[in-house]
Image 1 (cartoon, rainbow, N blue to C red):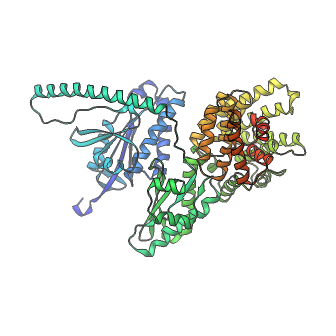
Image 2: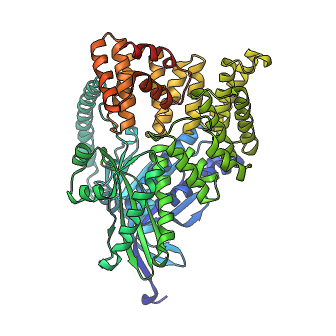
Image 3: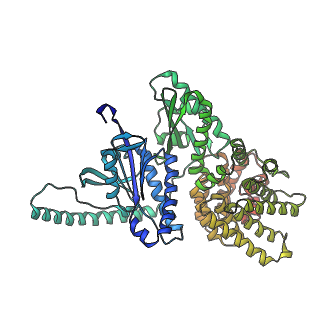
Length: 637
């Protein structure tokens, strides 16, 4: 190959392999291969989300190229986290651990593969990394240090084989902090020994003092209430054209404008309108100023770069409170097919918002994988959104939208589940003409969903709740009350086994445990659901508050109510304020409760009965204490 034929470039290289792979293979070859394939599938999915491209694999090692150092490090941290979770939840005796090294440097490209020092140093960093750890070169550290909220440990200059580099550990966990000697040119061993001994003694003293200080700080901080509360407001900043020519401004503007209009009716977030978003961005505000002035909690940024007939778009979702990128992706599209590109970008961003904020990754994937037809998928999402809007009210034909879709797609498991779910909501909130008929239709639809998709967790969880509810409503007493309740419990158990990270499965399972009087179990499941989807349906927080109130934990319930108020949107403020008034009434602050309740009624123009009904509706009509006791207290204010 001549010098002119060498194709060089600067690239971010991601290298990983399994810790002790040979020993694991000796222990159980089949199970090790099975576990590795599962972990590799997780990795490939993350590569797809973060723009990574695998260019070489060998046995248990994987080499990938990334367009961004930040994307590579975020991808690596997510992979280590997911592998850790898999090891915790998986029953297999084989628990694989991975090391990851990331470098940015000069590489040679040949037939899709990459070679050179840039790749070599990445592999050396990988071998230098700790089990479950990530090790970076200085070039990568300098790019990601100020753009992420990760903690780093400077390991100094290191030499592995013929490669010398400055290494940094990403501290995913405080226990990963380690001290490694840097390469020394000293030729006087005794001096080196004395110096090392002194450093150890001094380091030990400093470590002791730091630990004491950290311990005191932790003790102090643990006594302080956590006041940070995220709102559900998203600012989509007008995207920027980085091509150097204004003639391509229309691409960046067209994509961001399309997202502002299309996402509004599909996600349970407050998306700032187009004109206001332009005004906010023009002010060049800091994150803190955006939070204080406009209650912005999340920011979607985008840039476009045009080359020939293609354009590349870079997207990132930023947590304004943490000043941290929580998602990023890079995609390429044809300039001549801009409308198709806009639709595709819309779905990518929609999935990101669902995964990180409104649904959680598992529920979002379940929805997306249930519909081959994009129009049906968006119609279902839009129906879901409308049912959480202030204008929506439950009626005797509550299930009609899903019934119409189901008539066209009778073999769709998700539609059968959603149809049953809509009947359930109607049964709890609306006195239908034939409750027994509706109950049977709901149960049949759930069993059909399970038959069509046996591994779907949501129908099991809801079927368990439905069976327990049926026993309470005396629908199936002829089958035996205890037998039905045991069947309900088995359904819920099965649902949790299949979907331990599915937000809706956790929610309906939590409601089941509330009904049967196991509030602690319910609280655990509701809190897990909120962690997965911080801005999912309000019903989750409503039921979480009620579960704490059942345990007479008014203090925690009040904190959650106040956190809802601080979310800033009209519905969250209403729900949080209603519960705050109730809690004040129950804790001998009756006058404060009356003032709070009157303010709620005046702002929303509700009567007492209307306000109480709205809370019940927002809670998805669960069988909780507030269906009677809450109403009695609030009516008395």
